[in-house]
Length: 408
Image 1 (cartoon, rainbow, N blue to C red):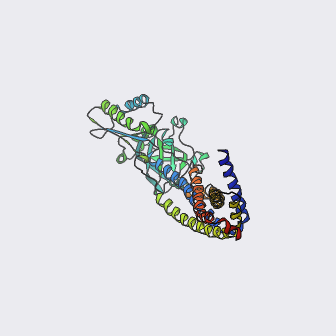
Image 2: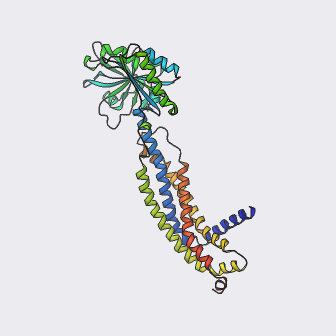
Image 3: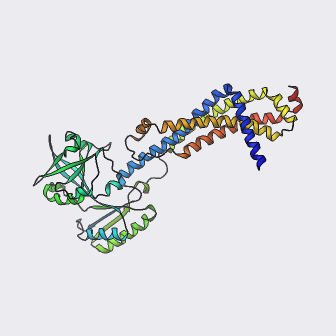
C-alpha cells in the first residue's frame, strides 16, 4: 500500500515538473480547457440561483412546500358559522404553527385622482412567512397591528406610487370609502408582480372582516374565506385526508369541504432549466474536446523529444505500466490545474453581486451557496479530458522499444 502511494505521489510530482518545463507549449490548450470548465461550472452555479428565484416566486403565489388549502361553504354558498371554532380545533389537534385565513375582496380607496376599487387580501400574521412576502419598505404585520384602531395595510408599489410615494416614517394613510369612511395606515410596501398593473393591498383578516360591512361596495362582498396551512411535506398527504374527514364530519352533509395541496412542488416535475444547462454544457463539452485535441498534439510532439529519456528509464527497470501512467499523468495534472483555475473563475462570476442581481431580478431573498456539485462537475470534466488526452501518447510511449529509444 505504501509503495503504491509512493509511486502515485512520485508520478504526480514528475508530471508537474514536466508540465512546468513545457508550460509554454501547453498554455494555449489549457486556456481552452479552463474556459470550458469555467463555462460548465458557471452554468450549474447560475442554474442554482435561477432555480431559487423560480422556487421563491412560486412560493409567493402558492406557498412553501407543503402548503394545504382548505375551503368550506354551505350548500347556499355562505360561510359555515361553526368554521372558526373548527379551524382553531384543527390547528391545536395537529399542532400546526403556520396557518392563515385568506379573504379575497375589494375595497374602494380614495386617491388624488379619484376613488377606485382596490384588490384586497385579508390574512393572518403567519401568511407573510408562508408565502415569503418581501417588502421594499416597512415590515410585515406584527402583533401590535392587530390592536390598532386604524387598520394597518401593506400596499403594492403601484398603490404607493399613486399615493405619491410618501415616507413611511410619517405614517401615511389611505382613505377607504363606503357608507362610513375608514382611515387605514400604510405600514409597508411590497413590489408589484410583473403582470400587475393596478393597486393592491394586504390587510389583517380580523380588521378586514370588521370594516367590510361599513366600507365595501355592496356589489363587492366577499364569500367564505379559504384557509391555508404550511405543514411538513412527509405528513402532507395524511393531513389532507384527516382535515377533509374532520371538517366534513363537523359540518355535516349540508356543507361542502375541499382540502388539497397547492404549493409548487405538487405540480412541478424536473428542472425547468435543464434544457438551458444541457445546451450550454454541450457547447462547453465541444470546447473541452478541442482543448483535449490540442493537448494530444502537444503531448505527441513532446513525446518525440523524450523518447531517449523513456528508453533510459526502461533500461533501468521502469515498467511499461509506470511509463504509461507517468505520461498520462502529465495531461491529467495539466488539465486538473486548468480545471481548478476554471472553477475559481466560475465561483467569482456566480457570486458576483452584479451577476446575482441580474439573474435573480430582485426575486431571491435567500441566495444559495455556490453548489459543491458544480465544482465537482468541473473538476471531473477536467480530469476526464486529461485522461483522454494522455491516453494516446501514453500508448505510444509504452510501445517504444528500449534499444531504439536509446539510439534515438
